Image (cartoon, rainbow, N blue to C red; front, top):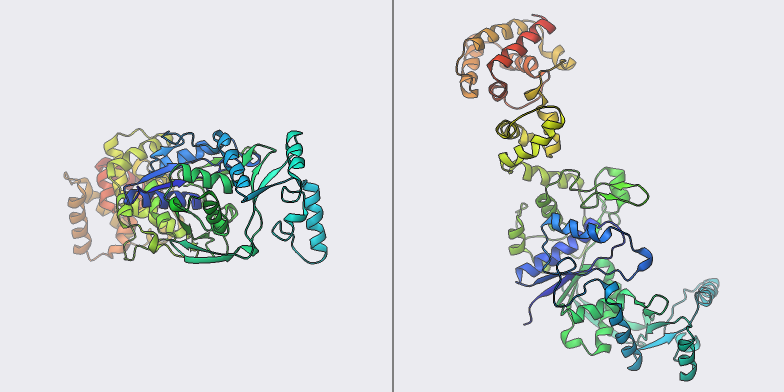
Length: 507
């Protein structure tokens, strides 16, 4: 069996949708599991839709996700070049080969004449199709004398080469996800393969030729390409390449959170989540959110995407890239669309946050502290991160979750004050303050024992006293373990904060 070779072949027409990232990921996992190659090819033959910066965006997105390109754009390789616009001299040869073999033909129809045919069909309630029924009566090399065809080409008339779809033939195709698919060719039209206007092929010709020349063994792509599969099968047959034809797998759509329809940027804008891996700046000044800039860990993003359409067959949800490579199989990719859940995406990031190394989180916290005017060393930032990470979904939330560790409260939460700072509680906090003042060992474990002993011995209500204590030190009913907070800010700061609360809120 030949070495597995897959390709991810996006078009640089804008930012890469997360559905495209999932396609790249599934290709990558499939190749890695088989010890094969992952190739990146840029399909930029649609010059009208080309967007500057989109190719760089694609490369950066794959890099952020940890999807390593073995061969292709940005890496090189034996089948270079890997941008279709740089390969355009290749395609005409193959298009002409199809004409010579009788599998394709020249068409000289103008856009105006085709519009007239469409309009005429609509008037009688029909849909115009350029197929076996009409091609013999139109301006094509099937009807025109060979001399006239040559004359038109020589004088610079615009033309296209169309594939001659067989009439009434059943094409049986094998899809690795959907099984056998059958289509009758009489339902299909004669697709354009090459255009003289820009001397570029269409997707159908270019991707077949490139997949063949680059020795691609498996084509794993989105469901939207399934209707093109009969044409691609027939092109392989027309070229005589059926022995080396790749196997195909068409991935299910990513659906809106409602489950109805394909996930779009508009859904993200409306519901407040990104649909692109990285932030995108459009030429019109519009900025689209990205998972990276929103604070997601790339591993969490990849893990979330992998399970949108693929089921490992177990209860396991957290997978490293190596575990995904080991477990992945196209046989467990579903046929129906996979519904995207913004809440599940947040859950995945939280899981990776909680499992993160404290020092790594501390390093990420340092610039946030600096932004808020706090000068801290790595040990301090790491300690703070370790105390709050279980409450966070993103590193960017650290400041709001821990500002009281670095800055004494300037005000006190009104609801918490009304609920806890009443009756005997202020006096109890004052008594607790005197106890803390006499402690030399201000570790969390020691202060915890001593304070709880005091409350128990006096038969005070634990919740009332501890929440009053928290209000005095933190300024609100929030934060991690109170004794960890006291250890972090130190004895002097703890006592100073209690004094300020007693003076401000009353004793």
